[in-house]
Length: 471
Ligand code: FAD
Ligand code: SF4
Image (cartoon, rainbow, N blue to C red; front, side, top):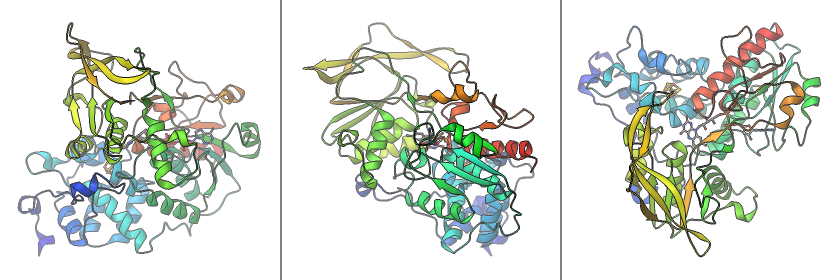
């Protein structure tokens, strides 16, 4: 009996789910990982040592009860596993797909000492995907409704995390989003090869079944006034993300052929999903030599989208070394397998022009110097190392900054010196802003980060709102 074997981690090695064949993967917008089978998930999750003080739980930003649901899934108790997994996470099937597990739960697994971490992410995805397919739905039959309602601005992970906790406490969440589908960057930023969009459509149906109301295609400040929401609702939660593109500030950045990363990705997702958009929003890089500047998740999504658009050659240039890349190592590996070339320790200093359009990027080689305030070693240019990389298209993926709405001042919501909304966990009402009735969380508070941290902050803010409302 395999399940009785306490030393399964010795007999059975770590196994990731299979990936699709490379030649198909490079042309398709479908998730590259297959799901685990029932036997595989039982075998892999049973490798867990059930540590007394599980480091994986501490490292997981939502503090999932990982060993407990691994045990349940190993024993085939899918509904119980799904129930437990939803106690701490609003979107377990999404986190299972897109969390950088190598830096979070799996990076902290005790079995990393030579045996290979338990495949936590793939098991988490399996539990919810399977439970939902088998008809499991969150059970809110015991919830006693209150007369309170909360407006949530933004249907990204932060807004959804907040709505989930409120609905489970009998408070009515009404979620406003300017986009035609829920998910924020999950739907309109992260490409389908990491997260298929049906996942969010199914989630919307689950949320609607929990009594969460969505008002999509509705931009607050344009289609509906914030004053109306402030008057009509008992509290307001802001989960609006960060959408101001960080510029490189080098010559040639405005030339034709130079693109901002997020509009490039969003245009491509909209094209694939068949949503209406102006024709110029879709950029097709077929046959082009593409250079992507940056080393985070956004850069990885751009290089892999360019591969799928059949670009002739795709290079990712990053100013630090591979060790110091901010993106997930798994995605770097996937990009490499798909034919992307990486150039490390290269910093762009100019986009070179030919007849009024980009034809290359002048780069300088760097070496890592002293650490900055964040403890990351600063790249220093090496004199005389300039070279030009030929390119027909250059994508700038340097990250995002908050984009405060002009109506923040009307409702006295303060921002800090980098324009993030000021709100935090350790205050009387968690994540309350300078306006007592307004709460905020996710990227717009902490800066561009991760899906799972946005979920955590949305859920924590909901607890702050419940305390504030006396529910
Ligand atoms: P968002 O997801 O940005 O959602 C904000 C929502 O607010 C949007 O839907 C927007 O339409 C809405 N909104 C804004 N203003 C208004 C308004 N006035 N009225 C109505 N609606 C409004 N993280 C990972 O963990 N793993 C990854 O692999 C990963 N890949 C990424 C790839 C890309 C290309 C990008 C850009 C980010 C990636 N991230 C990844 C980061 C992650 O997506 C974000 O940290 C997370 O989505 C932030 O959640 P949020 O709810 O704060 O904001
Ligand atoms: Fe790991 Fe993310 Fe799931 Fe937490 S939410 S267990 S970090 S995959």
